View (cartoon, protein in one colour):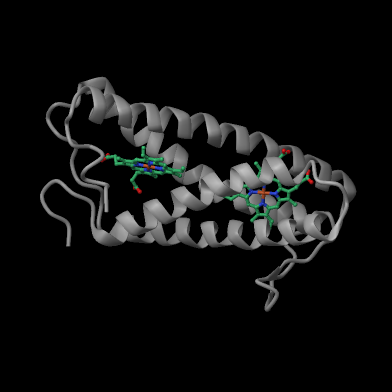
Length: 176
Ligand code: HEM
Ligand code: HEM
C-alpha cells in the first residue's frame, strides 16, 4: 500500500507502463503516416491502434484506481502556485490520454476501417462511415497528439525542476 509520501505500486505500474506506451505511440504515429503504402504500413497502423487502445484501458484503470487511492499530498517544499498547477497538469494528462485513443477509434470507424483488437476481438464501430467526419477526426487526432507532446514536455520539465534542482523527492515517490 501507499506510504505517507509515495504512490501505490499499482499507480506506479500504471503510470510508467502508460508513459512508455504513449511516448512510443507518439513517435510511431508521426513516423508511420509518412510510410509509402505497403504491408509494413498496414501492420504498423494495426499495432498503433491495438497499443493505443491498451493505453485507453490503462487510463480508465488509472481513473478507477485514483478514486480508490488518491495521489499522496505534495511535500511542503512545493510553493502555492505549483500546488495549484500540479493537479491541472495531471488532469490535462489524464484527459488527453483518454481523448487521444478515443479520437483514433472514432477516426477509424468514420474512415470505414473496423478495429479487430490484436487481430482477435472485433470492436464495434463508434460512428458510421463518413468521409467528412473522418477528416475532422483525423485533424483532431493530430492536434491532440501535439497538445499531449506539449503537456508531457511541461510535465517532464516540472519533474526536473523538483528533483534535479530542488531535490524534493517528487520523482522518487513515483519511481518503481
Ligand atoms: C494514446 C494513444 C495514441 C497516441 C499517443 C497516438 C498518436 C498518434 C500520432 C502522433 C499520430 C500521427 C498524427 C499525424 O502526424 O497527423 C497518429 C496517427 C494515427 N493514429 Fe494514433 N495515437 C493513439 C491512439 C490511436 C488509436 C486507439 C487509434 C485507432 C483505434 C489510432 C489511429 C491512428 C491512425 C489511423 C493514424 C493515422 C492517421 C493518418 O493517416 O493521417 N491512434 N496517432
Ligand atoms: C509520457 C507520458 C506521461 C503521462 C501521460 C504521465 C501522466 C502522469 C499523471 C496523470 C500523473 C499524476 C499521477 C496520477 O494520478 O497518475 C503523473 C505523475 C508523475 N509523473 Fe508522469 N506522465 C508521463 C511521463 C512521465 C515521465 C517521462 C516522467 C519522468 C520524468 C514522469 C514523472 C512523473 C512523476 C514524478 C509524477 C508524480 C508527481 C507527484 O508526485 O505529484 N511522468 N504523470
